[in-house]
Image 1: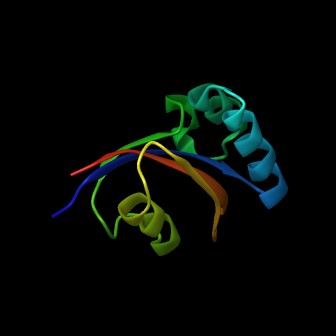
Image 2: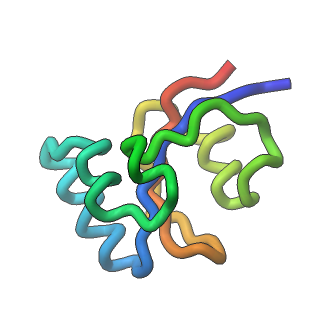
Length: 92
């Protein structure tokens, strides 16, 4: 079964996610932004979700982690929790 390691930033609005994505594109540190802005419990770990298999996360989240390019910030991705910026660290 495939496994992946990812980190994310979860915010309330698409606009906030897009603003943070611009900051990341300009060189801001992902972990620092996650600690400051993310509404997920993973914020204290810089948004790190650790390693997980398909089906652990919601479908829109899984689709990014298991199908899109790694080491690239994807999003905003909408789920019932809000809007995510997702970066897959590795997949195997």
